[in-house]
Structure formats: structure tokens, C-alpha cells
Image (cartoon, rainbow, N blue to C red):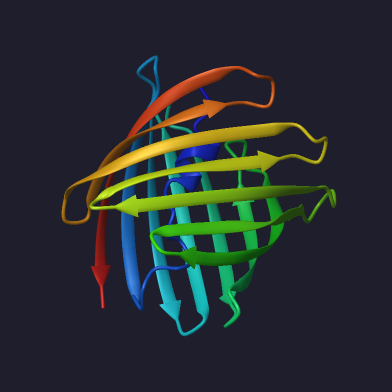
Length: 189
């Protein structure tokens, strides 16, 4: 099973956390067949600049990694430069231009992702609502060919800095699967 997108996107507050200088998150994802992947994320925020390093180790020992530098603007728009390395060791640059908004307990992000090698573009639309420690949401990704990947998720806070949840995935070819995850987060102010 391919966990790459799910494990990379579970850290939903990658840019818009409160004024936190440093944050570390570990997320373990388990698929329906028992396969696992563990993602370690570190974030450092300095004013309107956020740097994120993400490393994922899969059950078979292969790894992926990414480095993201994001600039946040006062109007809620943001731009990110990303270097992503796949399991084969190939690195691809990406550019993200997005918009963030909050209404009550609901956060919405929309934007465009551009592959820096091929120039191909995709879009994303993410919505998350959190009430009393329970979060639900939907993430929709549309690729350059117009095919869509949809993720719906729910998570529950089990202790300070810890969450568990499920993600239901509908891939671009129409196949579906469900994964579970556990997240542990620490912050340094």
C-alpha cells in the first residue's frame, strides 16, 4: 500500500500553528493489511517564515523525505518551495501557492501545486473542523489530467499532544481503502 500522500498530509497544521518556535510530530499510519509507515516532522517558525522537514520510514525500510519553506502573507495567502525525495532517491522540486481562511471552528485551504521539473499543475481543497477535541475534514486533490483523489478523515485527541484517527481514501482510479493513524506532538516555545 502507498502511504506517501496520507502520511505526508496528516500534519494538518504545518503552516498555521500558533506562534510556536519549534514543533516535532511523529505519526504512525497503519493500512488495512497491517503495513505501517512512520513520519517524523520538525517545524521551525520565525515570523512569517516556516521551515518543515519531513522524513517517512516504511515497513520495508524504504524512506521518503521533503523540505518545505513557506512564506505566510497577512491576507492569508502563502507560498511554499518544496524539495521531495522519493523511495528511489529521486528529488523533485514543487511550488505551492495557496490561500488559508478560518470561519469559526473550520479551516479551509485551497491552492495550486506546480511540479518544478515537468511544469504540470494540480490543485487541492482542504477543509477541517475541530470541536471539543474531535476533528473531521475532507481533502480533495485534482491532478494535471483532471483525475481526483479524495480523503475524508476523523481524529480524536486522546491526551495532550496525542491524537488517533482514520482516513478513508478514494484514489484517482476509483479504488478505496482506509488507514488508521496515531500522532504525538511536542512543542518548544
